[in-house]
Amino acid sequence: MADVLSDSAEHSLVTAFKAGDEAALAVIYERWGSLVYTLAIRSLGNATDAEDVTQHVFIAAWQSRQNFDPSRSRLVAWLMGITHNKIVDALDKRARERRDRETMAQSLDRDSLAWTDDVVERMLLADELSRLDPVPRRIMNMAFFDRLTHVQIAQSLNLPLGTVKSHIRRSLGAMRERLEVDGGARQS
Image (cartoon, rainbow, N blue to C red; front, side, top):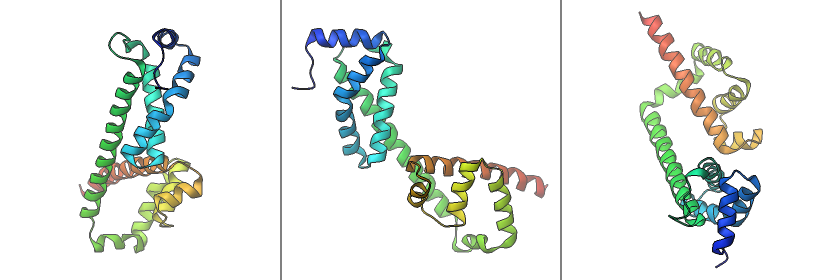
């Protein structure tokens, strides 16, 4: 099997890896990166998510390399354990985001969607958007006013889809907090 190293070769690789040799990490990535990616793409069905998981696996492996015990498992088995955990994390995140979107969609009714046509509400929204940093502000403007999808925004700005979604999620959270605080202050 091509993925299995001889005991002496694996021992040398593990020793260098645990010592912080970045060349050893490069060998490990070259040897098993495609396996990690393949498992991620099969589990997640999305190339961008699979690329993210692959990156997270090798970052986690590097950061926790001192915890690897070659007497307990082979290096590839350890990497597969990390891969499994990162895939589960990605699936959990996906489920959380879906629940959040469904909750938000349920909380909105048809009348509340008309707020973008109301001048006062548009001014309030524009004021909140102006408080954001330039990149999130541009993304939010494209989402709210240009009515572009996340994919269209990512393509337009040449950003990863996950980055666009993260900016939108963080921006909405920050705006919601400010509006709740401001709304509570006005009602008192």
